[in-house]
Length: 377
Image 1 (cartoon, helix red, strand yellow):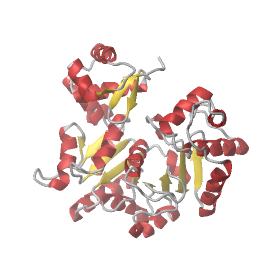
Image 2: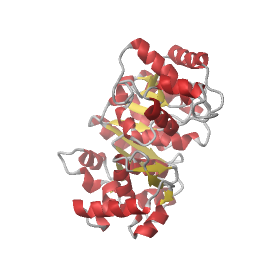
Image 3: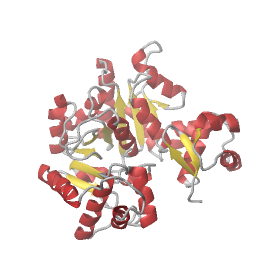
Image 4: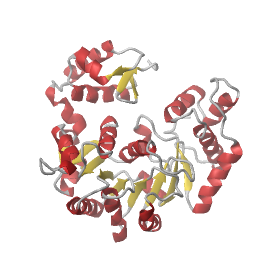
């Protein structure tokens, strides 16, 4: 079953959803393993049957059907909906990232999930008054121009971005906890406003899951994956916002950053991104222009494409670079820094070409920016 081929029958949707939940709630299965199972067995139901019969070895205790049904019911009682990647309501942009969550839970206006004009905005939890003012101004102007903001419901910049909901402007909040768990607790009022005033809260985590440190990077890939571009506002070099920016880059999306004073540590991460080629943002108009194909080419303003400027960018040059990359790779993962040393290609250029090769299914990406030849070819 191809996720891009949506299912419509209510009974089939329910069976598929329950099978997806059972697979994903099995301890040793994650989004990548799920994709491999679907490629091998074609449908979640057949993949689940194979797991149950031990065809893939010991994967531990498989989530019982009753537990999956109970989670669906708990979400329904809350007013939330669980959505598998095989349903048309699933965010189509997420299907194009490396490790899309097979199941998400949404509370609020589900129709927002497939609005194609989304922009992610992230930044410091301990944001300054000036950082919040800038973030709100950009978020408000983007919303007024018809864009939908996406952020992570954290303190600081995230909360400021989401606060456009109080002006009846929609926003998407992606959380690192279960759909029924509000974190931080002091964002309860904002959470409720998003849910009841035309926004939507989204998570891939099971019902009642409490936030853990490891959940936040997972959440970040969804924030960037749902949007055409990610804007970083007031971020230090150690900020999790740079993780989101890195995800956006690896997903082939635009990266923007608001600059700050050279000696201000609160902006060291933002300034670093700009030095690496991210589009400098002074107002929402900079983002609107970059994301509007009729205004100017997106390629001229993205970190992903700026990375190519240190080498010939014609088709022949790019093909030669890709051949050099493929010659150095094997089925065992290679770190991007080692690959750069072997190929004598700049890391930024290398990453841009590896993204293209990944989209062509020539290479497979592993955590930590490690790459290997794809077994599909």
